[in-house]
Length: 268
Image 1 (cartoon, rainbow, N blue to C red):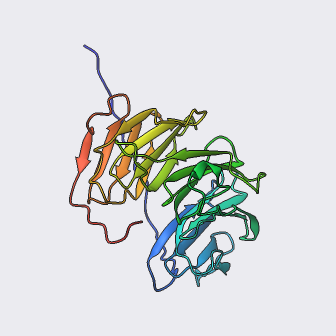
Image 2: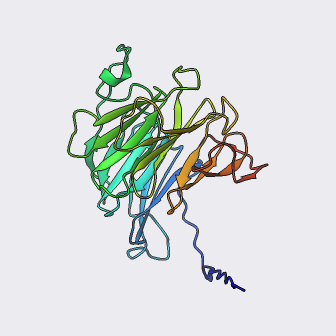
């Protein structure tokens, strides 16, 4: 008879600290790969950088900036090498900062009067989410209310690399509230406002999604987060319909598990 052993490891928690960002909700957090620094952003438009090694008993951030003027911060993420920070806010232009919070690159803004969004050089509406490519340190992804996902290169400051259009089951445009890469970087996953979850191969083509679940969450609610596990087959989505769902993309018709009653107070 074959025996199966299951080992559970728990993180030992003996101490904790409370970092005070401000008086308004914290809407974004990021930690560098080494675990030495944390970055926080909120509805007060402020981004704070914290360095554990240089922190004294006052637990103060070493820098406070407002990189996106009067726009709330949606996403903060360190690159895989930890030398750059990706910032997405309520504006149409994502920013890349260096490790100390200085401007490194800003995505261009598209012209809103062009009908075909593939012909604009950038987003024309507010960005909802952004993330770095897990394998290529110069590449990142953004999604927006203009119903597109856009791939960018830090060294290409004038125009995006590729544009992916978000569409519902009937082919109509749908805003995209969150996006993510698979851990191997081969797939792009997105949560759309029509309630669907859609995936594309990151190598293209991007004419239509490779995998899709059009009834993943309640239509009209904003899916605030989507992420894939290291097996690149399990996907978790956090819906604006007060649920969290676990999916196996090899059998995408129904979720593996659902947690309900998780109330959302903010879209992020």
